[in-house]
Length: 303
Length: 239
Image 1 (cartoon, rainbow over the protein chains, first blue to last red):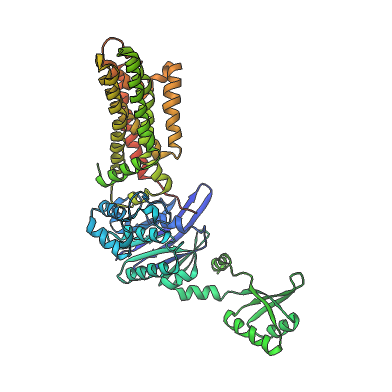
Image 2: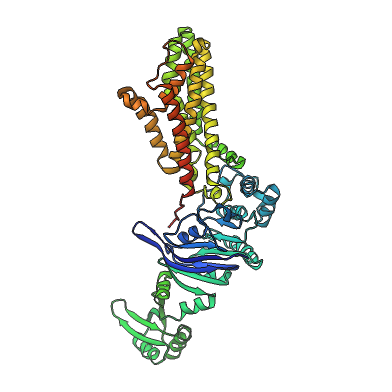
């Protein structure tokens, strides 16, 4: 059982602040590090993995600093986001090399390859692997010494749905075994499916922390904006504004539709089709105008 | 200070890449020229010394040093695959030392050995010319490997900088400006070769004690600094 502690960590590159005063503690189980692209997730994971020194603050594993301390890698396994690995080796040679660097041997490598179900392709050159196969061999190389901490940077990128499910299953199992598993992702659904605990990073700041229900609620309870076009915009507007789930409606003459701000997401999404049906109004367009992940996240930061 | 796994990976990376072709090309060319000169010209000590000095030591050794020294670590840092070495409980100076040993071995194998053979082809090691230049190539291999390994650790443009040093600094400035010759691995190695062979066939601008001190200092300094840089090497994210 290991705990990674990030204590008031900031990291800047020149004038750019990539991570801004983040404090969090990652314990056993699966934790998802969620945030839009460019939020500082990789920078944070690199600091947790000891590949980058914090500009201020400290990152420790069970009290031991991770920066400039090679011995922590006996308990940390790293799955980097970058594709590059020793392409001229076969999968087996690569995992065996990783095992040897941990002071282990071919037996452990065989076990790790079996865990990620890559035995069938282990004697092919890595250069011939698909993205999902590379990801699995990377996993095997990180698992070979059965680390108590596993750090994965965007592990599901480029995987097909079946590979994604397999990897999720594996990570879930590792979390259940009491290992500390941290993975980053910019996709809420991925994190929600896998992580029991979520840390949200937006623009380098620690925006939220908790289980996925809390995060989900934070994300859905915010005011939602919609652009709606219908066969009778004004009649629809009058009917909707009568209900407390709608806070404001503007008739957008240029766009030829209604801009609606809903405060109760659940209630509004049920109300809209009922109202339209009852009044015989045809809905032509219903599009959320601020559903991009970035706007969801920026709402979280403001909250 | 030596890790066999790191050595194996380095060695396979070095000989597996396309630029490894140059490793075979240059020695091949040297042997070809040596054979041609011998056949056309017969054995001549001065010609042997000129060819080994002008091509083998001045061009081939530094070029192979650049390829082996920078290639032992540069590509891994560039593409990020070094993370698989760095995320292991292996001391960073051990990684550097191992890579240095592999780079030296490769440079020696592809420069000193062909130099010796070419020397024997040219004049049958008359006046110890072949042995002298082989000793020089061996010594230069160590210093070049250490220098270019350091370059590969600190710069993404290691190959270019290495080539500029080897070809422009040592060859061009060396022939124009006397001062540049004092700071030249080639001249230090020549100081040793001068000691081995007899009567004025080979001459160096640097006295042997100076050359020896500089060789050791550069090799140790570069290796230490490379180890230090690797300890604090930061892998920037993709963002």
